[in-house]
Amino acid sequence: MMLVYDESENVYIFKCSYEEKDICKEKGFRWDSNKRRWFTKLDDVAIKLKEYADEKTRIILEEKIKKLEEIKNLSSKIDLSEKFIKPESKDYRDYQKVGIKFMLTLENILNADDMGLGKTIQTIGVINNNENIKKVLIVCPKIVKSNWYNELKNWLVRDMSISIINGKGNNFDSDILIINYDLLQKHIEKLMEYKYDLLVLDEAHYIKNEKSIRSKMVFELKKNSKKKILLSGTPILNRPAEIYNLLRFLDNPLVKDKFYFLKRYANAYYRDVYVRGGNIRRILDVSGASNLEELGEKLRTSCMIRRKKEDVLKELPDKIKQLIEITAEGELKNLIERENKLLEELTNVKNLYELDDEMVDEVFNEILSKMRVGEKVSFTEMSSIRKEIGIQKVDYSIEFIEDVMENVDKAVVYFHHREVGEKLYENLKNYNPVLVLGGDNKSDEKINKFKSDSSCRLFLGSIKACGVGLNLTEANTVIFVETSWTPADVEQAIDRVYRMGQKNSVNVYFLVVNNSFDVYLYKVCNRKQVKVINKVMEI
Image 1 (tube, rainbow, N blue to C red):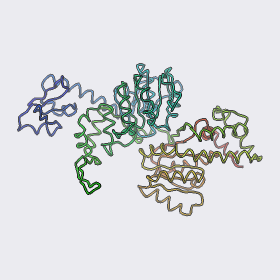
Image 2 (cartoon, rainbow, N blue to C red):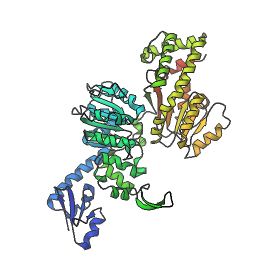
Image 3 (cartoon, one colour):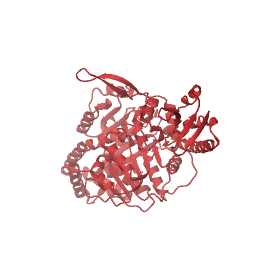
Image 4 (tube, helix red, strand yellow):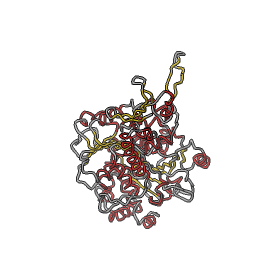
């Protein structure tokens, strides 16, 4: 028996007699009926039979073993003293440094860190620390385009121009382009005119369907790209078939044979189903899962880094707040312009959302004083506008909430206006939500359902009705589709989830329209003088 490596075909061949075939077959070697030989292209499979290798193959395998161990150790390490280029006033957390190092080491990467661990910041760290990356294309869901832009502005050290690609009027010559999946087909010809040193797919599970248009578009872009990074906090190993296309995008050797991958890790099998007309159709069922521990090991030694919150909990703050800015279009954009005009009349301040921290409290107190002395007409009009903004925001928020639910078991979503809550409820029924409004005489029943029923994954609650007295620690994610004028209300609402009994850090997302009063309110809610402002609010 002998194991040899054929460089011309990049394949390991196991030479043996018929009686000895089970030795290699059990280790994962496959029979090539045309060439009549047992073979594998997977290093980790060949390593299992290293004892039978000839001298040349043994040296190759020892190098492979060393490399695999380095990658494996790095993929799960959570402490690193190595220094990385960063903004002067900021620093990466230790586990983020490990992520940056891992992503700098490989060309094709899947960062599957839990949501809230800073995959975006780690990716920017890669750009900061690799001067060969000069042209970058970032593909992401529409609702996080502005978030990518803001994080790049905050964390990018290198002098690189950044452009968000929208429907029209775009600058494709910028060093870093940010585009949402749904616009790829519209701009594919223009995008294909460029070569990319780095292609990033955020929420990469968007391409799990290899037949979808968005998948076909990113595979076109892949042809013009060197380094590729996929970001997805989704628990991908629950249904291994869903990771197949992601690995195919990364040219991972695990998926060179699709049927073998699906049979080995998705427990794939053929079954008959009845179709229209009484006919029978044979399909390949890939809904299962098998050999998950082996798959996880292979991913960690080839392309994937994944840390869970509990792995790095000591480094995380108790509450992680994040602003998610929505780019206003159409009617929503008109409403924001009306709101800003009205606020300018009230405060004599243009672009309220751009105020620095020193001015935030002063202007906010002025607004409250005018409320006290009875500027009722203006505030009645603004209340009406903000209600319409809330209703319009729902359509933008749904996509973000759906993405979040790919990563968590349960979440709490807050709103201010009844109509907003009702619209959310109608659009999110797939998650078996409960909706709790003011004066709801079935609120206790609904709360208990959320706490005890695993199929009830969303709690939709009015900030006023649900901001106090509840314990919702079954979730560790809070989303504000609308916020409150009162910082105390916001903190109280968060504390329904962040309280005694909560075992994880809590992710809090504020969905705001860029250049809007909500951006300003977010600043108010995060000021150190929150307690002082709360006293002013007692009107």
